[in-house]
Structures are given as C-alpha cells and as structure tokens.
Image (cartoon, rainbow, N blue to C red):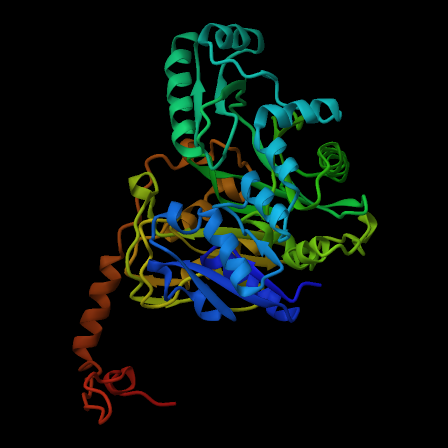
Length: 495
C-alpha cells in the first residue's frame, strides 16, 4: 500500500479522499492556489504545496506543477478526484512516465473513453447497446441532417470530447442543425480544445441511470448497482438516488452485465461509472463512461457499506478485489443533493461569496461531504460546489422525508444556494411518485420562485413578544473580547 499520496484537487472531494487516506494510515499532500491558502483541504492535509495563481491553468490544471509537487514531497501516487485533471489522458501519461501511480485507469483507456465517438465504437464491438446515431465524426451539417432524418428528430449535437453539459445542443428540425453544429463545436473547442462533434438520438422522456463499477488489474470486474441521475440543470446532475425507482431485479441484472461488459471491452481498471439512457419502454442505451470517481459516489457507499475511495487505493496498489458480484448487498435507499453557491432564480448561475455562517445538518442517516466553513470565501474561479448532502433510510419515502428535514436544518448565510429549490423538488408530486426524467426541471420548475416568507406568523410572533414584555437582552462586555458572545446577548435563558 502507498505511504504517501498527493491529492490533485480541492474542496470537498480532496477532503473526502484524504479522510480515507487518514483512516488507512496514508500520508497526504494537498495542492492549492493562492486563493485557496485557507481552504479546508489544505488545513487538514499532512503537507501542502502552493501551485500559484488562482487561474486553473496556473494551478489545478497545471500538469508540470503537480508533477513537481509530487516529486518534491515524495508522493508515490496521485488521486485526481473529479473535474480538473481527473479525465486528462495527458496527465495520466505524465504520471506513468514519471513513475507516479495515477489512481484511475490507464492513459490509453482515458483517451479512448474520453472520446465519445471512439467509446461508442468500442461499446458497439463489445455488444453494449449504444444510442442510435453517428459512429464517425462529421462536421458537415448536410450529413448530420441526413442522419437525423434517418433516426428521427429530435437529435443531439454533442461534443466528442469533455463533459459537464458543455458542447451539447438539442435540434428539433433540419433548419436548426447548422447553427447547433457551429455553437456546439465552438463551445467544445473553447472548453476542451477539441471542436469535434457528432449526432445522436435525443430521447425527450428518458432517464439517466448509471452503474458504478470496480475493476482490478487481475481481470476481476463487478458492479455496485445503479444510481438514478435524471434531475439535472444544464445537463448537470443536482439530485441523485439509489436504487432507481423503475429498477427491477431483471433490469438491474441486464444493465449490470452491460456495464461490466463495457469495462471489459475497454480494458478498464479502477473505479468508474458506465452511464445509460433508459427510454419509456425501459430499453437502455450506452451513453458514456466516466473514468473517475463520480460526484455522487456516496449514495452507493451508503447502501452497500463499501468505501469506494478505499477500493480505488487498493486497486491502484495492485491488490486483487476481495469482493465478488454475489457479495454485493444493497440495503435501504439513499439520496444526494448537491449544494452549490448558485441562484436557481437566475438559471442556476454561480453566486460565489463569503460564507458568514455555516451549520451542517446532523442526525441518523445524514452525511454531509463539505468543503467549506464559516468565514470561507468561495472563489469565483472554480466550480461553486459547497457540499454534497446525503441521507440513507429504510425506504425511498423515508429517505425523501429525511432529506427534506436535513435541508431545512442546513444553515448557510452569506451566499445564495438552491436549498429552497431542492426542498420544493423533493416535495413535488412527480418526484414523490418517481416520475423523474432528464427534462424534469424545465418541465416542472422552469418558472420556480422561492416561497414568500410567512409574514402573518412573523407579525404574530412580534405582537406576542411585545405583549409579554419580550426577552430583554443583557449586554455585558467580555473582559477578553470587545464583542459580546451569544451567551451574553440571548436574554433570559437557563440550562
């Protein structure tokens, strides 16, 4: 097993990886940019190395600086987390060349599966059903119109590289194709340095269901079951759950075998996720493989009891999987809500700023993977994720109730978050009934506004307070501090 690893990421995922490392007695090295000097992952690491300016290209995306940090600290391996360099084949290759273990699949596998066209070709050869569409790239709008006419509108123009919802356009008729090709290609070029696009069928009423896989260097591949990821904004997930509402033992077995086949066809090693689209008739199609640890991995951990990061480390160190497919037992139901500094009223635009006060929800079956603290300034330079709130309960209904309670008790002052929006989604009849599809938010919440505060209740409380004389606060200066503590300003109280 490794003695020291460097975590090439930041925030909650860096902290999550370090937690498992600390349990396993592995020393950790954090990397950070100038604006992240006081970030929680830096404060909790055994060592830390500053990469430079806030711009990602000068810090978290700078391969040379991270390689140098690994050498400087004597780290044997690098864990990339998710985002940044986690699916960068060039980074994985540099690690291989420098004798540093990349905790993930090989650079060749990352390159192959990172290209959606190549991955579709691999899956087709491996017998995995793929979404109808093009197997070869072709930027010619006339050729794309021909293919769209063959499979039927609507269709998707998609970037071959990258992910995160970038480089995607929905096309409803032939007249929209040329503009969509130009727009998707331009966005993909700016985001990933590759403007290659292709076309595939767009299912208007589809579910996004993914399977977690584990594959070791000894040829063993298993899956840990599915995650339902259909609640999305801008093609990015914000609520995930497991098991999926529509899943039957037969469908799970069929999709699980397809996920394992996908891993074997591509030569996959380590933890990964095989993503599928499932249509209204429960027919599924391969979408893509995420060659990294997924943001939503905790819900699988909650229902299986398996630490996926620990498995990543064990596999990367050469150990054989001790688990067989029949050993995987799923218990209960788990839900994850992503909490960002963003404004759902403004199309979920980022809303970074200083967290004035943070109080995390607690209780049975509640887990909050958090990367911030009271007083922390959320930078404008990176993804504004604050935390991932996860709950686990015996049934889906109980898990929904537990999540609503946890979100209601989550106190985050100073920045705008989608917490009220998430609560309304969870309370909605479509979600409660499991009618979740990839168009859930535009279909049901396109005009969402936060509920007005209950002014009548506030007025009633004020009147009662006035009639009873109120609780007069007693201010006494603290001898050690000019600012009185809450215990001095609460008024009459007793323990």
